[in-house]
Image (cartoon, rainbow, N blue to C red; front, side, top):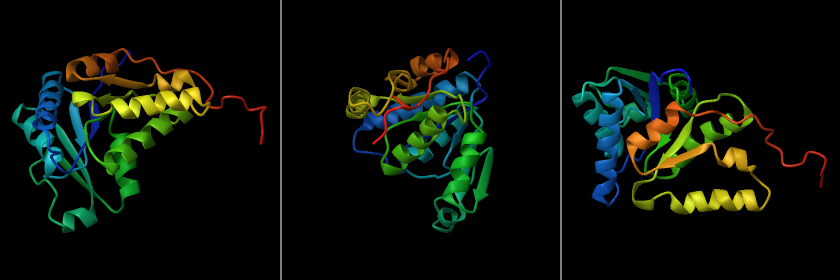
Length: 198
């Protein structure tokens, strides 16, 4: 990318996970974003790794923008000390606003919601709706099996190698953000062979 990133969206668990390494990586990414003056966009919660990344980034002097649906505000999980907190009506609106506010997307360890949100913006990238970098912060090999499965998609003709290469991967927050800064989106058709039908 030739343009400096202003904000990065981070998807991560609303649970802390069992391994302390997840929390350490979360804090390291938060501090790296703040040091680079890159704002954080996240799901607006004050619990789990989500609350940890927000608090660490704020303590380091960073900008933190949350986007949370009304339903979750009602369950008293909304963070109340952010730079900005956007309350929206639905998950669809939440994901769209998070994407619109961000210049790139990172998935830290998390559950189903983390994967769903990451793969949605990755699909938008594949289809040409945006050209922003998408990356996995692979803490202690958490995403190794996922990376292997994407390789299997290529081998079985469901994903082109250029789009597989759009998923940046690093165990180090600084290394991953360095990849974001130099990201060059591929210009390639999604379909393996349009002429072949069923």
